[in-house]
Image (cartoon, rainbow, N blue to C red; front, side, top):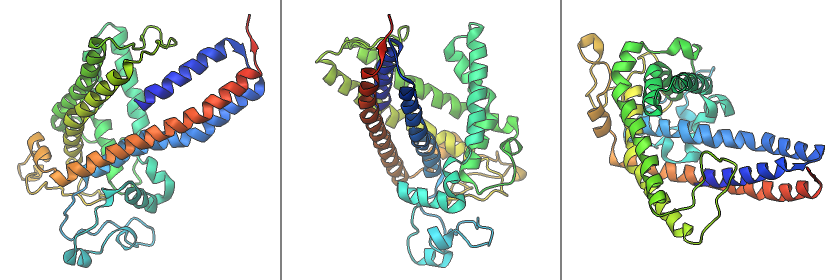
Length: 352
């Protein structure tokens, strides 16, 4: 929702700029805004929305005397700075790293500074580019988007799984392409969870959109991205209903399927890779290594059942905090850009 607000303001400002010849210093102000806000946009859209939830999904809330892996060059354990020692954990309940955004932030920055907040970004960028290429190629050859989306995701199961491994594990000297799991194993383990996740996303967008159309809301026309529909007083309560349905769909469908997918991907983590949060590789003894005849990864059912109720509550709370962080950033962006637009327009010449 907050993205739609910011997008609408941006489109209105863009339309105004196209009708005026703005001075050079006006472009300088807009460029400065981009430079200032870009790090915060990346922090929320990548770190908070992807890295933090992945760690929260993987973390075991009740590990048996867990001692985090040593990540510093002087071999000092991260436990000395961010978690209880093993003998202390035996006497008291261990602190959950992802119990708060601040705790997760401190754990990540203790590894390699602010760069840890963007761990896996190169792999994520490659995944995004490859997805757009495959999806765009298929759609341009008249393949329906409902088919092109899942196919492009299934073709890149190695990259998606490698990204999850990079996010949850200790820093490695290997590049992300050197950490790609075998395609056959990654596909066998994650194909169905990926389809479930994509289907849940489609439903979470379809039903709120149908509800909005059914109530006659004035919605933007995708064929006219620069045109903002006139607001109606009844759109307020209608919009509230749409937002509530969207939130419910995300909580009941999108987040559960994301949990299943992430935990299945995490179960493929190589034995030699240590994690930065407590992680039960055996999923309460339900995962048998392939070397002894097991699948070597957790099933959908076990991935679901092994995620405790307390972990669900912790994850939902995290998403609520992320939503309000993004909303606050959007309000700040609007509060800065609107006065600047008035200032720039007052010193601009209308194009005849």
